[in-house]
Image (cartoon, rainbow, N blue to C red; front, side, top):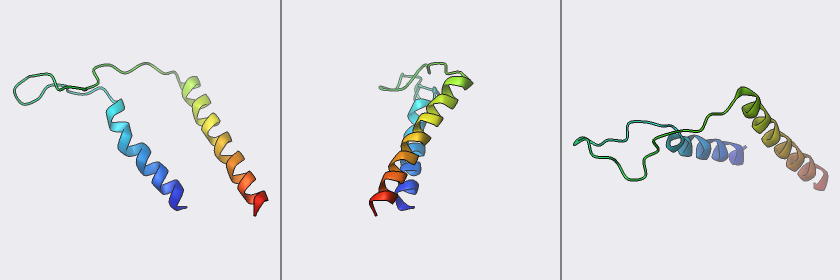
Length: 68
């Protein structure tokens, strides 16, 4: 359970850089390394990505369960 929470926390902490946001500082100067555009992803592609991650997690879980 700790690993799942750690993974989810890492995912949410790193997700902020994936969103396009305001890339100007208080003096209207561009911030270095700021993301200015985000690639489009369809619902089908998103669902496929989630399904692939879920399949890998379930395979690892089943393998560790059988090893015990």
